[in-house]
Length: 216
Image (cartoon, rainbow, N blue to C red; front, side, top):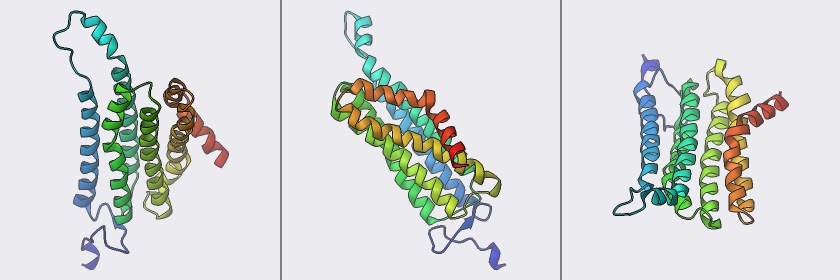
């Protein structure tokens, strides 16, 4: 009977099997999904419909920086959610430390609408580019920390360990590296720094796979 008693995931020591605390685990996932949903929805609020203008086409052209920031941020947050969804699906158990790391990670995700609007309004400004890069690097780095903590703490299902360690970790590490590397570049050229971000979608996964093969 004692084995059926649900433990508080925040209690230490305490690795709680997700099947023994299904409600608690579902609440963690639901809360995370809610944060992602709100953050990705808030991105569109930076796009304002022009009112009382004679040349609507020109006004829409002037919105291009905001549209680009929206598209980039939507793609990045969408990628964050997919990675988060896959990672939490691979967990066999969880504990208070992982939940705390997840909250810290979500704090960075919540900041994306702000940094995205800042980038859209001041797309050629070095400060806005650096703020955006720091936001994305922070989010990616805290997610990488979650993955490696879960692996070392034995929270990941055995059949999923190899994939998470070999692919998920390196792929997200590449994202962190690119955003951090773009910070000094932004002081020379904001366009070049932002082009580096776009390159993540073209070569990020391939670079992650290359790192994974080198590790093995």
